[in-house]
Structures are given as C-alpha cells and as structure tokens.
Length: 147
Image 1 (cartoon, rainbow, N blue to C red):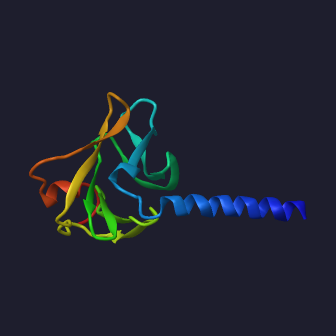
Image 2 (spheres, rainbow, N blue to C red; image 1 turned 135 degrees about the vertical axis):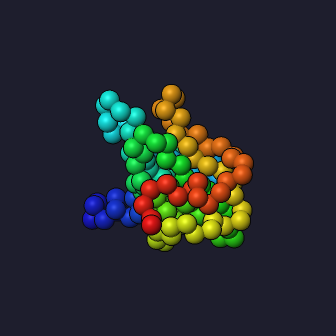
Image 3 (cartoon, rainbow, N blue to C red; image 1 turned 60 degrees about the horizontal axis):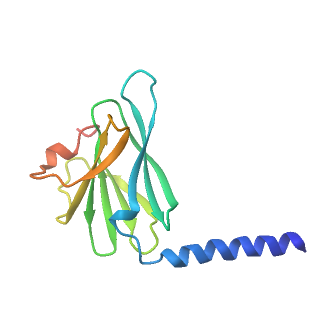
C-alpha cells in the first residue's frame, strides 16, 4: 500500500510540473549543450535541450560537431518552433509542452520565414551561443549529408 501511495505522489508531481510549463515554451527555453567527444581535437557531441522552470524537460542528441563549427537555425511558427540542424534534420518543438519531434531530413529545403537565431559553438568558451545572423542563405544552413 505504501508503494502505491508513493507512486501516486510521484505521478502527481510529474504531471503537475508539466501543467506549469504548458504554453510557456519560448526561445529562451531552447538551448544546445555540447560535450567534448575528442580529448585532442575540437570535436563535440551536441544535445538539443528544452527547459522549463530551470529543469530539462526534453533532450535529444543531434549531429555532432567534427571541428567545422556545426550550426543549428531556429524559426518561429504558429504552434511550434522549427530547428534546422546542419545535417538537414528538421526538429519541431511544441510551444505548448516543449515536446521535440524529428520530422525528417530535408536537404536544401527552403527554411521557414520567421528566423529567430542561430546556435553556434564558441569553442574558446566551450559553450553554444545563440546569435542573430544576417543574410542567411539556404546553402549555408545545410553542411553535412544530402546530395
């Protein structure tokens, strides 16, 4: 009986946390974290993270950076954000609950209109900066893969 009560409390707290975040996902909740994957070279594993109330609610591994400065581009749409990664992967981030969905790889597909910013590695600081670039061209977004 005691185990069932503890389980119900944990479930209630988990559900409660999600309700607090509903409809509150904005670009400030979206980050990319890097982890060094090679002790000698400037190579990093990259993770797309969605946070709420300073806690990670979604995390998904995306294309690693093999030293060439992999970038990811964030766009705003009605009910979701679109993150286009350097390998042509398109991720949808639901504004309601922060859920991340890989919709596919769309090599050289024209990006959405509402550009917000670019995630780019700052290897000196060993972190990812979110910056607003100018004059972004489709050919500059897609670096790895495709045809």
